[in-house]
Length: 532
Image (cartoon, rainbow, N blue to C red; front, side):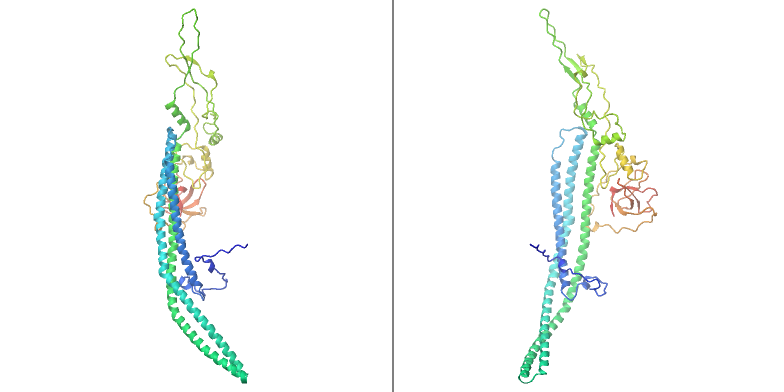
């Protein structure tokens, strides 16, 4: 069975779409594209299109208001689930840096919950509220202006139909009169009398139709000036409302993008604090701290050998228990982490120390690995000759789409990470000593409303050398202070012309402010800026 054609709604413009001939100018050479000069025509398509357009515009605004409301509900539910998750117990029995890292994870999850709840409130106040107000303005425009004009448009259509029908009757009478007059010119006798009678009746009918045609034409002529005046005013009001709606839509969606970008920065700051806490977590040190705080010692009590008492001699006291000291060599069956392999291949520290001693599963070499001593006073035990565990590095994850600056100088950087960074951009002798700064806090009380959301038009390109081609412009979100010679300082709001975008997140560009531009300093972090 053939598929049923989709029924077009009253707000759809597709029903009025028609193929235009390329050599036909419906505007007759006019350069004006104002609504009041562009929606007339010989038929009724102009008013129908305008009415459908305004109904569709109101529908779009209402749909956008529903979108903001649904997004608020999603953020509120997400914030509630994050708050519930932050209260879940995790790591209450842990100690050391792992306990601190787990506490940081829980605290930052609670902060993320608060930030997402704040985002929901911000969307409801700054986006959903203004959108609902503008939709109400569209409803008032339709009730007070469009609905009365639609009734007048129907009245105009009725007047035009009266004129059309009366004209058709009048034209038919004229044709019959001409026909009867021609027949009477060559007829005689009875036939002539019959034709003359028909001619007389037709003339009488034509006079009545002529009066109707004259009356309806006069009524339409009197009606049209008022219609044209009201239609022109309606077109002007529609164009004003449409321009305001389009500008409002652009600003409100721009503000939404800014709000979402802000929450992304906030979440990234929380993740950075979690990573900072994990930087302080060293498994070997936590294991050693656990042993130092809760270890029970290395004395192993061995029962004394039983010696039977002779039946003829006096009974002897049993010998004291023997004590030996644990001096086993740890044997680990732990799988070597991937970043240990990379570190070993690159010849990092700990390459020749082996990884067989990295597993929590220990086994002993047998009972003979300890020496027996008498311990009447618990002294004189041997000390285990143990080498320090190898220094490990965090996993070398691939850089995110907008990379963070390199880790601080106080943390050890793996050779593989340095190699990746240096291979993606021009080599620099100070690359491994680059110090990153934490992302600044999002300014409080920032007005993200529609009137402040859209950025101004980009300025003209700065004069540049032929070798430096400008790719695009960015705007600084935060202040940044250079840490090496090839970087430059900038402040929040500065505009930067980008000339290169390496994969490591340290881009090349120049400040548009010539007074603060310094020759040879053209590197800046990409996560401190946004597209201009």
